[in-house]
Image 1 (tube, rainbow, N blue to C red):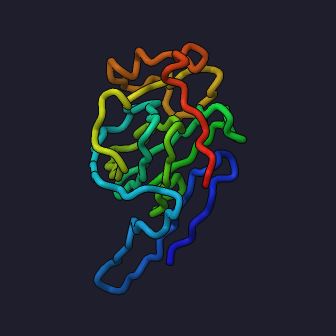
Image 2 (cartoon, helix red, strand yellow; image 1 turned 90 degrees about the vertical axis):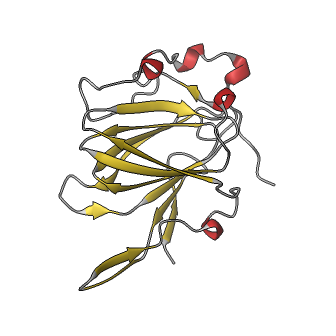
Length: 188
């Protein structure tokens, strides 16, 4: 059983530190299991992204979709920001590294990101990210907030990132249209 640790900064974000089974041949890791997330829905699509060092992806958010991220190669600086109105952690920002760590060790930690929490990553090295989602691609639920919004105050670990055109045009948090503003979902 992995160690499951709730974020101390953003409600409903969950970190997974999997059990590593290894011997002289290498190692095996179970990176995801549905039962680890009793409040989540079934993940129905798996994706992989490869990025060169210096790229920044985000900040993206969804009103209806959760993500589960794992970095099997390289180092990603992850930024999460709670956009959910009514959340006890509304406005909180959390930055951390997945994959290769600054000290040369490797963390096999994964992170569960609920709807309404903006998420992005900077590739501090060439890297691979895998992510599972609990909804099929829906362009109407692909939303964004500015990566460099001073209200969010993210430490991306990059000075001059490579951005997509889309990510370069995302609005600041204060400029998100009310129709696209996430709201905190009460647990039942």
